[in-house]
Length: 332
Image (cartoon, rainbow, N blue to C red; front, top):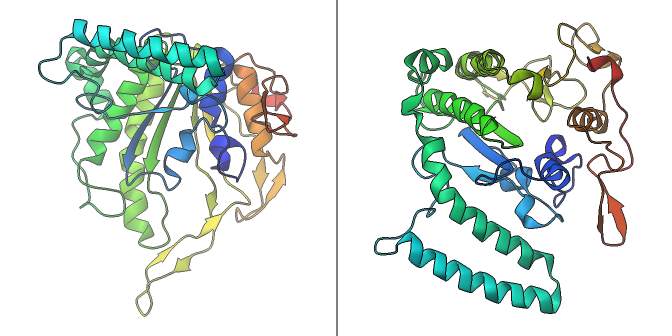
């Protein structure tokens, strides 16, 4: 939650929502903020891509990676596009009348969402159709790989293919002007069975993530696309045994030190910023607060973090709250 919203409290807008609010949409026919999930699913659920107190049209839109990206996006049998257009116009006319009377921003958000959903009916099929991707691209991402382990904590069967497809879709979304794409990959919550499960997850993620960066670079998109890989916290450097009489070790939650990597988007590559102690328990050099990270990411999007604000309940809120310092050594 804190990695996405900058706060441990529920009800705050996610970073993608702040960017959608601050920059608007570069795509007329797709949301400005899209979410793709694989594996068991994130513990925080939709709160991780919520718009919080921002208008709801800025929240992340959860896409499926096959068929219709959003359930019930297509028209039901017997309803033509023209008929739907007439119905949508009538609903929006009523909504505009109500909005003029009461000025509720959620009514304006509802109008915008209905209109976007109508336009997505044309854009979504082309987006989701991977038949035009070459076999070399599918192989690069490992889109046809088989799972190496029976389903378990990592989610149901087919997760290797699902995550690889999500990475391809992320690139396709970026190409079509989507501002912010969240790729969730779970579960890395290895309290036990560490050797087998971390191998399963790392093997699932390594090839598609590397392929996404390589593919973006080959297409000339990496310089203007910032790729960030991270988690909500680290894991203890010491083992944890939850196996009872049978040793079945894992790692516990550890918020005091963890690592992320970034590529593209004007970030200075080829360096390590910060340092832990010899066992990875605490930070010895250049600690980074989540507010500092968010301030730096917003800077790379051309936004001064102290100026991106929204008034709610009598005060101005921002993603970085009352903190945040630009991490200058990370910027090329």
